[in-house]
Length: 92
Image (cartoon, rainbow, N blue to C red):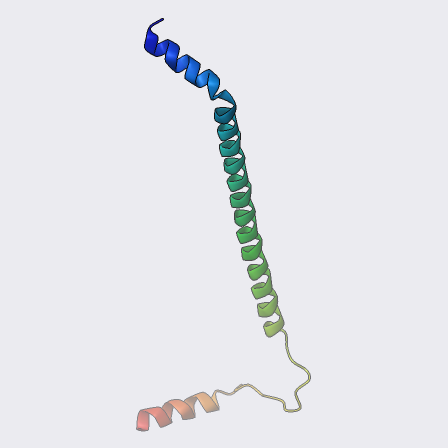
């Protein structure tokens, strides 16, 4: 072996503990970042599902008839109101 290789090997052997600690620290940081990223993705998906369910429920509740009102609204069955409003807007 050349002198450079021998010196490099001795240096690596002397600093082996520090190098292993740095590698373990970097692996732990990577693992922590991956877990945090996965938690964020799961939270976003759960939030999107929750919002969708809430919107569907609100739409369902709004579509149900309300029998608590005191007045009754009768639709324009004969089409009288529609013709009058169209005639009034055309006249103006």
